[in-house]
Amino acid sequence: MADPKEDGNMSVREAGRKGGKTTRQRYGTEFYQEIGQKGGRAVSERYSHEHFQQIGRKGGRKVAELIDRAKRMERAEDAESRG
Image (cartoon, rainbow, N blue to C red):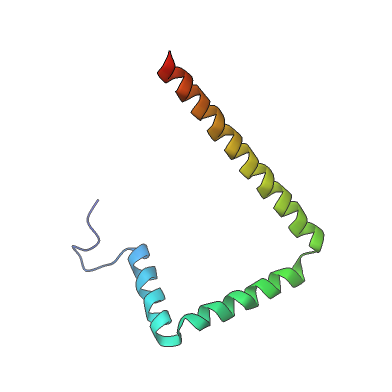
């Protein structure tokens, strides 16, 4: 596959980064804070309190599972190094 830089084109990642930097220079970081807050308000108006509780529980369970898995892997590595 040809390198996108060889024919003068940029990758999607490079284009996104360039656009983001330009937007930040043009509008400032406060712009991003404002649109983030607007988005947060819109989402909170769209979904119920129970919806966010469910998401929180799912996230909490996933974190607990990941911690448990990491501990089990650590114990297995310790046992392997000892014996």
